[in-house]
Length: 377
Image (cartoon, rainbow, N blue to C red; front, side, top):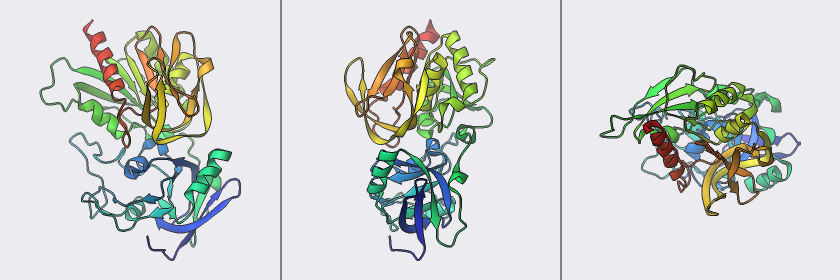
């Protein structure tokens, strides 16, 4: 990208500053500064509800080279027959800002409707390029994630704490229940009904489930399950501290008593662990990217997974009825848990991987098979 006339700085709470150039919306913005190690997939990452209120740093130096798959004139997303975004993980950019080493302003891809900078600008999201993002990543690894702010010359200054999102899950969860029917051609009459508790679900989870023989009841994060008929529960991903989701935790405790299959992803594993009586903690800098290695404790096989989370389950607090299922090969954090004698399980990574590998899609298949067996008993 040709250097524009507007200079910008990224300022961290420890006082360190990184100078660069503004792209996207030329305005200042604060947020929690985190990094992702993905080489590609910026349209999906930026629209991932799990990044709500965070300034995202890309460790891969070049971003924007294939543009953004939107409607050319309006930069609006495309939607499928269910009203779900086709190319994104939600209907808008969720990140508070984007930090890159180099931003390509002349994308080359047949599906591109506009440049990354134009897309950010139309979504009121600032970006900064021209800084050493790898040095920045090293600082975040050594000191842990920090709050920070993008300051654009000529724009109104903001305080570092102004980007704090008090309850990000409440921001990204739907206000009312939504209903979806299976989109599979020739779906059977014996359709499974899944209650999906939406704490910030990624659109590809919805797409994946609706491509199978299921009927979805998409519920707000704080919705009570009493009076709702379902065959299984899917507990979604989402942003922030799982302990802020007290109503969801209480809902899971009651759901355990019913004994129907439950599967959780990302924030879902943390909420399920808290409902079971375990504890969670904040990681120093989290796991974000599409190249996180996870080991299945049963088979010892290692899978490369897509992840986006800043909290984890404290393994030594799991009750006897629960056990670790996956662990991270890099730092041995818990990446999955399951109940010993009940059809309850959850993983920290994204089996539907978008962006990223889908080597563990079989885990969702496993959950649906548990639902099918329980329904037919």
